[in-house]
Length: 137
Length: 293
Image 1: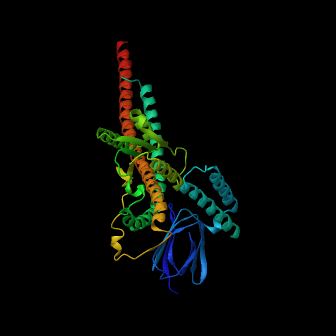
Image 2: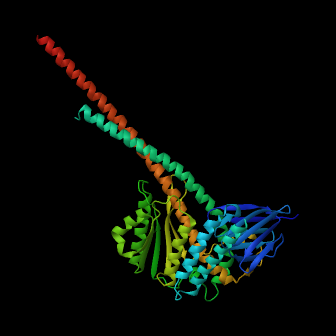
Image 3: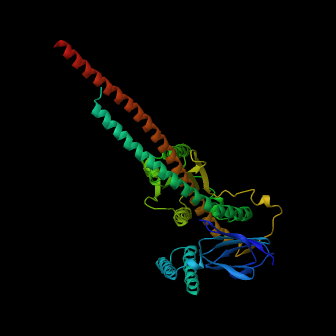
């Protein structure tokens, strides 16, 4: 089957860089599956799980807390805010971080600019996704 | 002339100094390798980000209502300097170089009648600049006691800068840090952060430009991309500076070790001469004593 170059980078390191058959990306307006020859796009990501398929089976699943993806016909580059393989994502830790994110959102006064509240809300949602992903793994 | 006992004491003390500098050199070499690896690992992300930014930036920058982080506030009155130095000394001229560059910059800006604000990253630079420019300080960040600096730390600094920008705290933001060229050379560098320089050439080199679709809109993506880019640039500067620090310390400690070795040789020569002179003196005393009898 046809493949395309898939790259996943976080600010701290390059996590994946190899040809794959299909990738599922948690775009901000819904999950999207990417196959070779996709129309060029730049999308923002929300917290969720990136799944990669090779030879007809899923070979990698990583949680990302948000970021961007650049998609072109022969290449997908994901710039993740932080990326953790599902196998090393701990449920207890994710729950702790969710609690911290929720507390941060609650403590933000309503007078703060909307962009800031949105950012805090996005963080809570991303951490909720982390807990869900950790629970499923 | 110093007595034998004094000389012995001095030789021993220089020897233990040499032991310490040698150990520090080894430690710096080991840390350098780690710091370099970390800097290397951070590179792909910065490169990809630059490519996307090049794609988006040129399209949005010319549009009215472009974000101030990209095009600046339009004024050129208040300058924010972010000075990145080490938390520890004993690294040769590493911290002083940055301090000197910052001082020259502050002087030049103030001579032009501009207002200067300072944000220091790292303890040494803060101490150096505070002597003269304490009133310009708006913030201080230090990673002392931290084993490794990660992206979240850089992000905190970026958030601080973003907030200042939103409150109209400054017009132009410049980053001063030591760029790591190789183990013996670090180059004090100035890099403009805000308004963000749009990287060119990256997009142009890829031939005919594909038409990208954006989800959500270009402006929204740019709105989140720019603060990230700020954090990435700061992160990169911190990592480069960390690698440079270890490199500088390694070189400094190598020199110190060599100097200590030379000093020990000189002192040992001196010690042996004194010892021999003493023996000769005693012999003469004995012989002339015997002759007198």
